[in-house]
Length: 284
Ligand code: KIV
Image 1 (tube, helix red, strand yellow):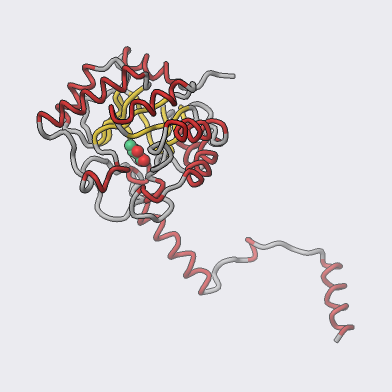
Image 2 (cartoon, protein in one colour):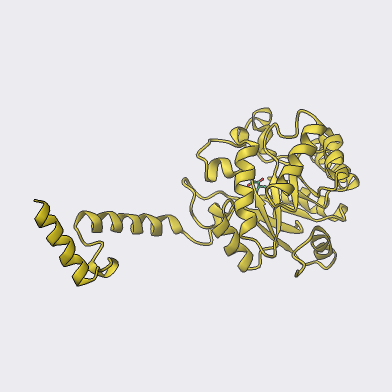
């Protein structure tokens, strides 16, 4: 088998100063598309909540939801590293829960590793998962599963003390053995310092250009999310109006009897048709 992107390859990319490109995916066709285009890492993010499941935040996403979508994503991937995002309450209660649930991402979901939010406060849990042989991607800065504690989606590390805490957390995660750390909504100057201090890659989202890699939500870059584009993201295509137009045209075509035409339909042998019509006539 051709060796796909591995956690050690991503670490070598940092040493070689090659930036890591990552995106989220939630289903097989999108995962296959990203993989074919050469994405390094695909995260089955718990942003599944808002992008696909219609929840307002990530709190309600369950292990069953995540495993279902991780399986679909894994089926579409040949090359990229697939990371499953451990959902709220799948690792917070105990390290035993964390090992069991992280294992499910690999065993049932076909992922190559898991992402866990948190720093020093989560080290015991992260160490236990790593000890079970499961690669872990850390996640610091804005950690959406602590949304209610943080009081909203806000930039993190904006004071010297808070920036210091993020740096200490990042160093603790590196020491514990995570293969990379997501830095979400951290001021770019702080992300730059942290990236310089770590030997493992930092993967930024809303944390500026000095991280070793970037991750975005795929729906955001394709213009498939409602509301105004987010400052931290970039819309590379605007698919929503294109999809709206296609669906609108289909509805009108059906209503006007313009779809389907006979070109979209199937024929029956003349003899069979005659026999069928005759049999109906005889019955009536
Ligand atoms: O769930 C998610 O989309 C994330 C981001 C870091 C991309 O965790």
